[in-house]
Image 1 (cartoon, rainbow, N blue to C red):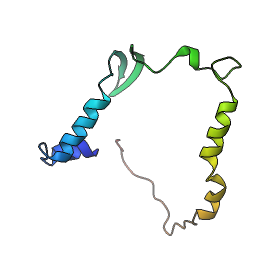
Image 2 (image 1 turned 45 degrees about the vertical axis):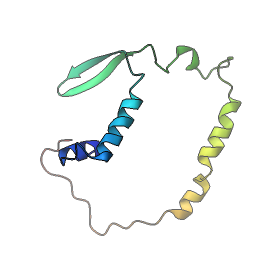
Image 3 (image 1 turned 30 degrees about the vertical axis):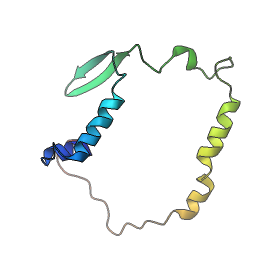
Image 4 (image 1 turned 45 degrees about the horizontal axis):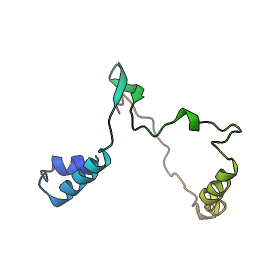
Length: 111
C-alpha cells in the first residue's frame, strides 16, 4: 500500500508526514493540465489519448535518425555511466538454492 494511503487508512490525516506528502503532491501537480481519453474494458482503464499544453513530449525530438535534433555521441557518456557497475555484477551475485519445489497456485488469482 502506498505510504500516503497507509497514513490516511491508519487515521493520520492531520499528521505532519501526511501534510508533507500532500505538499509534495500538490507541488508536483501545479503544471498538470489537459485532457486524457481512456478506453474502458472489463475493469481496465487504458490511456489512449493524452493532450496537454505543458507536455514534455515533442514529435520533433523523438527520432534517432541523423538530424540536427539528436547527436548520437551524446548517448556515449550516458551509456558508459549507466553500465559502469555491470562488469562487477556477476561477482556480487550469490547462488540461490531453492530447497522446495515451487508449487503452482490453485484456483483463481486476482491482482
